[in-house]
Length: 247
Image (cartoon, rainbow, N blue to C red; front, side, top):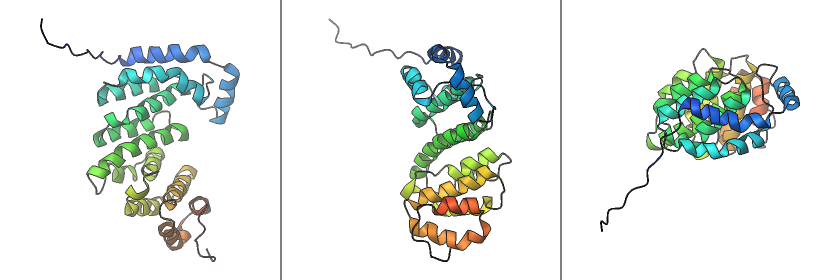
């Protein structure tokens, strides 16, 4: 009797079309037209919705997430692209959840593809979700290869405001791993902009880093306050109690 042990076979990942079909089958029975109208109004009538709250959506597609565990990065991105092509906003949210679940499959060379995706059907909800995925991928890259990040140096000067927003936000939650000189440089570069979402992003990024190093953020704010929009300064200094009383 042979002692050979047959290794378990791994099923190939589903195609983008079949994965989208499975997501549709999971979400469509839960659609709520009344809630969909409210959700569409919340995002300024820009996108149609099925009307699924985030917890409901995530629970419905949770069994589908492991189906792409063996998928290479290119296949994972192709599935995300296919979901992005679907009309209702929930499908873009599923794509972001899928990328966030399998972010370890992605590497620094895949970031441009994520930035391209962020420019399609772009609004703060999808852009900020992708910023989190980009941040996870680049934080791991920075831990192994410290130094300048060409992809973000290009992104902060990109024509698209949403790509610039991702550049400003990509270090959220990095704490001690934050490249502070990059944070200060990006904040200075974007400070002259009048766009609400850019001004908000600068303040959010600084406020987040202040949880790790409040003294450094306070010193930076003291230096650049004349160049910051009031909105940016308020966001950055929120919960920061060590600012000098004359600021």
